[in-house]
Image 1 (cartoon, rainbow, N blue to C red):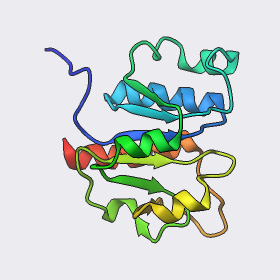
Image 2 (image 1 turned 135 degrees about the horizontal axis):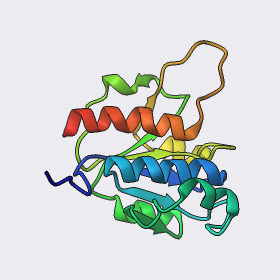
Image 3 (image 1 turned 120 degrees about the horizontal axis):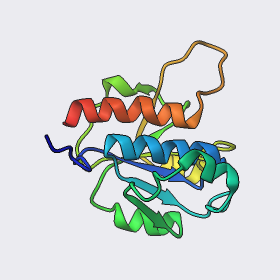
Length: 155
């Protein structure tokens, strides 16, 4: 039996990630699930960072990753696609959202999310329900939770 190397489900985008271990874990998750990953630069670390390399292992070579030099470049390419922001400030819960195969789910920086100007500009926003008085989940965990639902709906 032959395994698919990628699916035609939603994509994941990271806005200027700043923790190398999280980005590496997300690369591994996307690689194992056949999800395309898009990284909007600048990153807060170098891909040669030992912390990144220790977690990413050989999954970097097994992944479909596209880099954008800026959010403006990313936005230009996404003109005809839906970009969905994952944020703790959203009203809509991710399980109530109807994902499409060409959606891109955007996750902000671990330290600061996305700038308010981008937050205000993006129409679709989703959250993962959490217990009150908790700040947020780890970024890699959030990606895994939401992309699993996106793939469940679109595959």
